[in-house]
Image 1 (tube, helix red, strand yellow):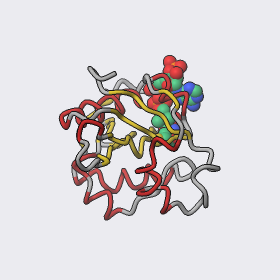
Image 2 (cartoon, protein in one colour):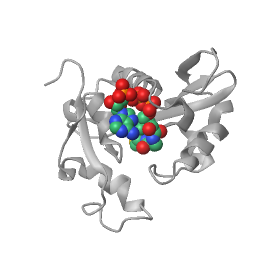
Image 3 (cartoon, helix red, strand yellow):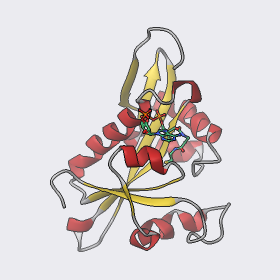
Length: 168
Ligand SMILES: CC(C)(COP(=O)(O)OP(=O)(O)OC[C@H]1O[C@@H](n2cnc3c(N)ncnc32)[C@H](O)[C@@H]1OP(=O)(O)O)[C@@H](O)C(=O)NCCC(=O)NCCS
């Protein structure tokens, strides 16, 4: 891990973090859906960041997927998880995702889902693979705007789920 004894804090993002989050997501453009700065600013209240000194070294956020008339099965998607390379494999990504899950749990979703190129990371967090047909809402709202893959079913991203605490 990058040196020094400065503590890494995991905290809700503020508007001042928006440009750093934009840069971090852009740096990981091979793995993450890109966001405009405007999109990040509009949704800043759902972002969580890891910061060391004044620097943002990690970020993560979530989106609630509505299930009209079926609130008991509503899911939350974990999105835009990234940790700056020198700080990886020291638990920062885990802290970010657990913080996002903790914040989003206030809405009492049934489950957390993710579409990811990093299945080992999410498996370590208790997520398990599911067929992409179980996340059609995500395919309709996110994948339909993908500029890299025409067909979400041949795209190598893996769909994963973790039930909310207390749900089976
Ligand atoms: C995925 C990512 C966020 C992980 O962040 P991190 O801070 O390194 O994660 P952690 O240190 O909390 O890892 C926890 C565990 O996940 C697993 N893991 C993490 N990265 C892994 C990798 N590249 N390969 C295999 N397992 C991995 C390991 O079991 C790890 O525990 P260990 O280090 O004790 O073996 C980071 O690699 C990253 O920013 N990648 C680029 C963007 C991306 O792919 N985001 C996910 C898509 S939503």
